[in-house]
Length: 127
Image (cartoon, rainbow, N blue to C red; front, side, top):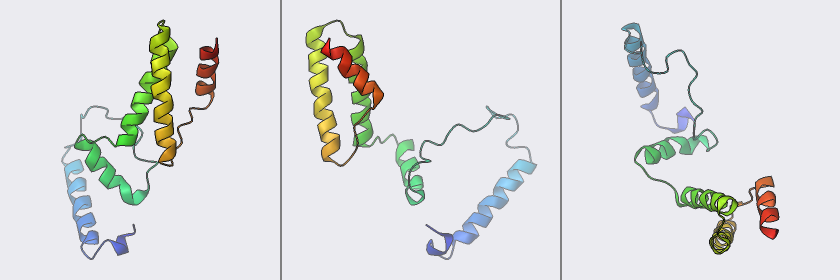
C-alpha cells in the first residue's frame, strides 16, 4: 500500500511520529536499552505482503495464532515424536495424524512438504 492510497493524514502522522522519535533519541530515551548496539532480530513477518504486515503484528501481539501455524506446529511435534519414540503403536498413530494434517494443508492449497527431512523420516519408518 502506498502512502498516497492511505489517506490524507498519513503523511502528517508519519511526520509527527518521526519528530517524536527524533526528540526521544536526542533526550536519550533509547540509551541503555537491552540489545543496544546489536542487530535487530529478524522480522517474523518479513515474508508477508507489505499491506498485511501491520495486521499480522497486531494479531500476533494479541496472542492470535493462525490455524495454519498451529497445524504446522503440531506437525513438527509429530515429526519429532516419530523420530524419537520407541513405541511402534505411538509412532504409527503419529504418522497417521501427520498424514491427515498434510492432506488438510494440501487441500487448503498450502504446501506441507518438509523436503529432505520428510524423506529421511519415511526411510526410517520403512525399516
